[in-house]
Length: 66
Length: 172
Image (cartoon, rainbow over all chains, first blue to last red):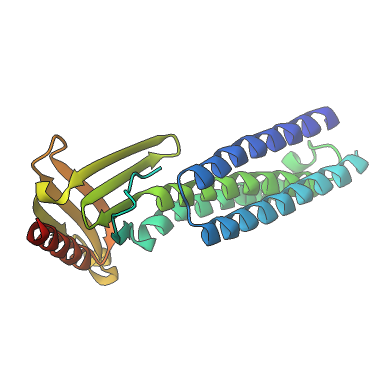
């Protein structure tokens, strides 16, 4: 069960990194205004990292109950 | 990148109405709640909950938040598409950037002297009250029609384009 859980978590991180690269490329290359870009980047990464931490912590806590 | 010469002045940037963005985001928000509903059902039926080893609530929280992260990313993808889908009206030409998907982008340009007709179409109760609609431009160029859908204040956009055409023709 642990292996499935952490493999899934790794896929989630990989997907997050992949899509983040696409978004950063689009925001930078296609000319989103700088103030909006900073706001969007900040909001996106703060939100995403917060959610990733919750996923990681809940999986760790779940593992202790196995 | 959008090709606007240094001597050109951008008169207006036209984007879709915020309602068009929220229509798409509403789907993402709806999808976000699906695993919460499923988890409530799973936890509510002991026969299913007992088959999950360990504390199923902790596992389901992790899965729901992981799904939430996917929806978070999807939401930003939608916003990016919305933000990059734009019309620029300059004092020389009209540039249409059609961002139909994250990997689908079409940029069309028409000189203002090639514009033959500008039409506005507002359809439906919501569009009437929120003041959005389609602006269609008939051109004499290769690409016969430019359409931007669900634009905020389409009549104002039409007015600005017509004024830009008049000034362009007067200066020539």
